[in-house]
Amino acid sequence: VENMVYPGVRKMSSQSKPKKTTQLKNMLNSKELEFIMEAHNGLSARIVEEAGFKGIWGSGLSISAQLGVRDSNEASWTQVVDVMEFMSDATSIPILLDADTGYGNFNNARRLVRKLEDRGVAGACLEDKLFPKTNSLHDGRAQPLADIEEFALKIKACKDTQTDPDFCIVARVEAFIAGWGLDEALKRAEAYRNAGADAILMHSKKSDPSDIEAFMKAWNNQGPVVIVPTKYYKTPTQYFRDLGVSMVIWANHNLRSSITAMQGTTATIFKEQSLTSIEQNVATVKEVFRLQRDDELVSAEDQYLPKN
Figure 1 (cartoon, helix red, strand yellow):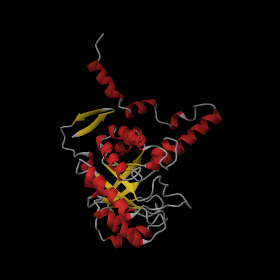
Figure 2 (spheres, helix red, strand yellow; figure 1 turned 90 degrees about the vertical axis):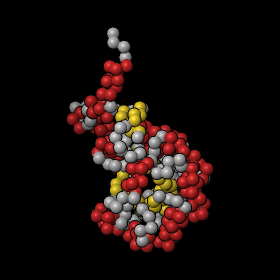
Figure 3 (cartoon, helix red, strand yellow; figure 1 turned 90 degrees about the horizontal axis):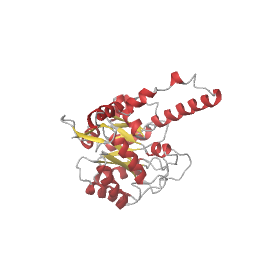
Figure 4 (cartoon, helix red, strand yellow; figure 1 turned 60 degrees about the horizontal axis):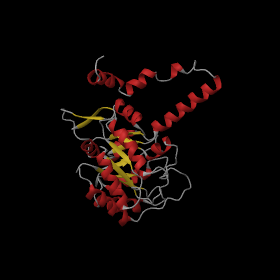
């Protein structure tokens, strides 16, 4: 079993920890409500794992934002995969990539699956909108949906392409986001599940969980359901358990918290022209070195560099 023990180097572990793909599949099929947390680079991914989370959400919004571009497929799929490689190398827990629409048609999506498998990413979440995508949380933006059959066949192409049977494809249904009702959401979810999707992500931007509640009752436990309660964050987590939800994604909060921290730190330094009031409120340089696993490099240098 491959597990990352320090940046850039894979080591075969003697432990019986399942593959990352198997870990994610087990989470999706767990009888317990599971949680994955957003990360957007190697450092944030490592922080997520250290906090105790069992999985990571490779957020499209967060990855594009940390690159300084919009969440409209302005970052190429290969640039996203490059970020995924650093995140996967830095962690031993599974990553589910927010893969937007698959960056094109079935052919683009299945090539993406191959490249994600190469880099140890555990799964991809594809949404049934058109390329280039529009972020689902924008107000007043058109959100055209993909043809159901075309998207279902895209899912099938991805499942047919994967070489690891536990690699997960999560189908993200955007019917509620686009203004459609329960019937459309249910029709799409059933089609995608029948096409081979390992789970359905049902998305909603209402401030209450009514869309999710209606879907879960109609869905009648046909397969795992993933939700993203960014907008209905006041809903008690126990309610999601009661509804039978399989997984909750905390989707963008490391990005947003880092923005708040950087804005505050930068503004204070600019205003005060001093570091005096800042130093005690930021991570030490030693903590940065620890997160980079500098101790491993020191040990490796002692082993592999000649002694003078």
